[in-house]
Amino acid sequence: MATIKVIHVHLIFERKDYYFGSIEKVYKELDENTLGVKKSYLYKVLNAEGSMMVTSRAIIKRSYLR
Image 1 (cartoon, helix red, strand yellow):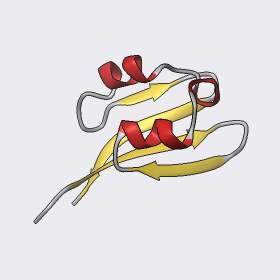
Image 2 (cartoon, one colour; image 1 turned 180 degrees about the vertical axis):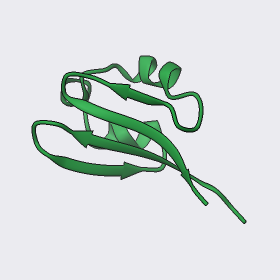
Image 3 (cartoon, one colour; image 1 turned 120 degrees about the vertical axis):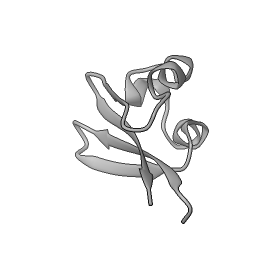
C-alpha cells in the first residue's frame, strides 16, 4: 500500500485549510508573510512524519495518508 505525504496548512486568521504534496507547492500558493515562516526553516522543522510548526499566522503539519 502506498503512502502519500501531505502538508496541511491552517491559516489562523483566515480560518482556511490547505493541503499540499510538498513544501515547494506550499510556497507556490502561499508566501512567507502569510505563513509567518521562511521556506528554508520549514524544511528543517518538518523533517519527519507527524512534525508540526506553529507560527503567529499558521499551523503547519506534515503527515501521511495510508
